[in-house]
Each structure stands twice: as C-alpha cells, then as structure tokens.
Amino acid sequence: MRRLQIWLRSLEHRLNTSLQAKLTLFLSLMLALILLVAAYGVFLFIESIEHEGWAGRQREAAQNAVRTIDDFLLRIEDTLTLVGALSVEQVERSPDLLPEILNRVPAWIEIVRVDRDGRIIAEITRDRPLLGNLVTIPLSNWFQQARAGQRYLGPLFITADTEPYIIMAIPTNDGGVVAGRLRMNLLWETVATIRFGRTGSAYIVNEDGVIIAHPDPQVVLAYTTIGNRPEFRTLPPDGSQQYYINLAGKETLGVALNIPDTSWRLFTEVPEAEATELSTRAGVTFTLSLIVFGLLLLLATNYLLNRFVFRVLDELRQGAERIGSGDLTHPLLVRSEREVAEVGRAFNAMMHQLRMRNAEIAKQTESLKAEIQERRRVEQELIKARDAAEAASRAKSTFLATMSHELRTPLTAIIGYSQLMEQLVNKNIYETVTHDVGRIRAAGMHLLSLINDILDISKIEAGRMTISAEYADVADLVRTAVNTVLPQMDKNRNRFQVDCPSDIGLLNSDATKVRQALINLLSMRPSLPKAAT
Image (cartoon, rainbow, N blue to C red; front, side):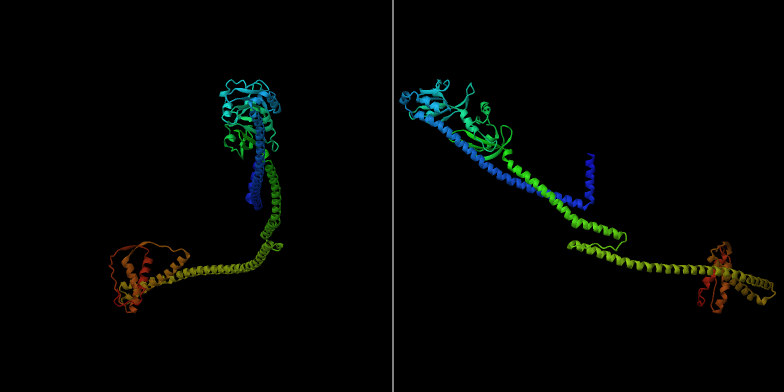
C-alpha cells in the first residue's frame, strides 16, 4: 500500500511538472477511448450478425422439430383413422386386425373403438385396460369432444409404473369414437433428437405450461411447469428470439412455435454463452489486437515526440542554460524539419542579438565608469571648494570679530572724551560747543552700534549670538534713535516730529537690539516727505 502511495505521488509530481508525462497520459486516454469505442462497435456488429445467424438456425431447427412432431402425431392419428374407418362387421370378422395394428405402431399402449352411445365395440391393450374399463365413458372428455367431431388430445398422465401417456381420440364415420393411449416415451425420444449447435435443446409444453416432453424425462415426471415464467407468458410463438433465464437458471436464447392442430408449444433453447461465443471470441481477439496496436502506436508516438519535440526542447533548455551562464558562442544545430528549423534559427538569432546587446552594454558600462570617475573628481573638487569657502567664512568671522574689537577701543575713548566735554559744558565752561559735543557722542554711539552689528553678524555666523534682557527707559531708547538719524534728516531738509512722553515707562528686553531695530526702521526711507510724521 505504501509503495502504491509513493508511486501515485511520483506520478502526480511528474504530471504536474512534465509536459511529456501529460502528453503521454492524454494520448493514452484518447487512444484507449478510441480503442474501446472501436472494440465495442465491432463487438456489437459481430454480435448482431451472430444473433441473426442463430435466429435463423434456431428458427429453422424449431420449425423442423414442429414438422417432425406434427408428422409423428399425424402418423399416430392415421392409425386411429384407419381403425375408425372399419365397420363393426369388419372388426368382428377380423379379430386379429387391432393386435396387428398395435404391434406395428409401438407408440400405442391401448386402442378402443366405441359407438355413439359409448359402448365398446373393440379394444386392444399392452397392459391392463384403462380406457375400456372406464364405466363413465359417455361422460369422459375424450368421448364427448370426439363425438362432437373434434380431435381430442389430452393432458399427460403417468401410471403407477411411471409410464407416461396421453389420450387421443377422433370421431368415426358412423358417429362413434376411436381412442387410444399414446406412449409419450417415443415423443420424448423425438424431442431428445432435436439438436442444434452443441448444447441447443427443445421441449414441449401444453396449454397450461406443463412440460410434456423434455430431453430429461425427470423434468416431465416431476410435472414441471413454466406457466408462471416469463418465457411462457412473454415469448410469442412466432419464431422470434428472446433472452431469458431458463429453468436451470442460465441465460438462454429461446424460440417458441405452436405445434399445428394441437394446443402444444415447442420451445428451443441455446445457452447465451454458446450463442455469443463467436462474438465474444472475436471481440476478445479484436480487443487484444487493438490493445497491441494501441501500444505500438503509443510507443511510435512517444518515439516521434521524443525525436522531433522533446529532444529539441532539451536542446533549447541546454542552450538557455549556456546563455544563463554567459556562453553565447555555441548556436543550436538547425535541423531539416521546417518548424524545428524555424525555432533553431529564431533561437540563434536571439543569441546573436544578446551578444550584440552585451557588447553594447559593455561599451555603455565603460562609458559609465568614466563618467562616474569624472563625477567623483568633480565631487572632490566641490568638497575642496566647500572646505575653502567654509575656511574663508571662518576667516571672515574671525576678521570681523578682531576688527570690531580693534574699532571698539578708540571709539570708546572718543565717546569718553565727548562725555567729559559734555560734562564741562553742562558746568557752563564751554557753552558754545554743547550742542556739537552731544552730536559727536551720538555719532560715536552710532558707530559703536554699527561695529556691534558687525560683531553680531560674526557671532551669528559663528553660532554664538546671545540676547541679554534688561530694563530700559523707552523714552531714552526713542531719543537715542532719533538723535542718530536726525543729522541725515536735517541734511535732506526733512521735518521730523517725535511724540513720546518722557514717562512712557520701562521695557524689559535687549535694549541694544531694540534701539538698533528703531534706527533701522527710521533709516529705511532716507528721503521722507516734509509732511511725514
């Protein structure tokens, strides 16, 4: 079981991954289907021919059997007719006539001649008399039917000595009746000789379906009946064939015919195995031949597929692997078949195009390498330029810081002297220069502020700019800013009016930067209109 599972998994894997396995399975299934349909069609054809042949032979055998039995009955009946044709006087004058007739016809067991009233005129028997001892002859069926002008053929009887017989009676010219007991053994022997094929046989049933003649006497002695069986109820007595299960429980092909001038029916049967033997043998032979042919065709198809398809695919696979490894120097062999040659030429053309593209890509790669090297060189130069600019910026910041410090020192001295002079003037020592000295101090303060701005720029660039919050008089900040820009306004003959109360209050901020912001705002329009405020 485990090996079967492994084999099934292997088969499933091959079907999922192998085109050859899929094509082989598909071709096998299609070929098997075609072969099955062909074998079935041939089998039906042979079976129909065989069926028709058996139908003709079986019908002919049944008709021959019916004629044989009919001739037998006619010969028996002729004996009774002969006896019935004799007058009473002839019978009485010839007492040895009936024994001679009985000896010449072994089928008769007993013969009796009665008049129209049922009285016995003459009789002869091989054993104890049955018909002649019938006290109720006038009431018997055979007497009444024969006296009415009809032939009587009675049912099967069996004596205590297992001697089967039937009663036959016919009317005579003088209104009497001739009857006899007919030994059925001879009829059985006649039926037993009816043969067709190897095992075909026949038997006779009466109107009730009771078998009265059969190759096997025990069937008759057992009073076997087929009155409730399909063959008796459905098989028409016209010689047509029909399959059914017979008394032995075997599938049988049967034919039924009525025996003329009797209520009997003859059945001929042949086993289905024998009836279909030829078609079965032919079907098996043809099927085996088709299987062998199919296997050969499948092997030939696989060989052709391997030769012209899968080998080419394997070569394409090997070529693709060489291309994948970078080997483009081994083109495929172009075969003579047109379709395969086209595939090979297309593959070789693809390989040539790949070589051309690889060469072009190599050139582009070299060009890109050169371009990358150039860009790296430019990048290095840009880095050097950036470093030089940063160094220059740092040098500028250092220079500005140094120069601001150097400028701040003398300006501080000037401002100090200006303050000293202003103090002297305030003491009324130099009244005439008070106004000019104040302006000198203001200009010096402005120059100091500019230098501080330069220093602030250097601090910003150096990342060391700080803010110092302090309380300052707003009126003083405004007055300082106005005094700084007032000389320029006077020069331009502008009128400037300041509205700032002296007690406006204090400001908590960086006074230097606030004062510089006011100066910048006042200096934005150096040529103010005369009416500006």
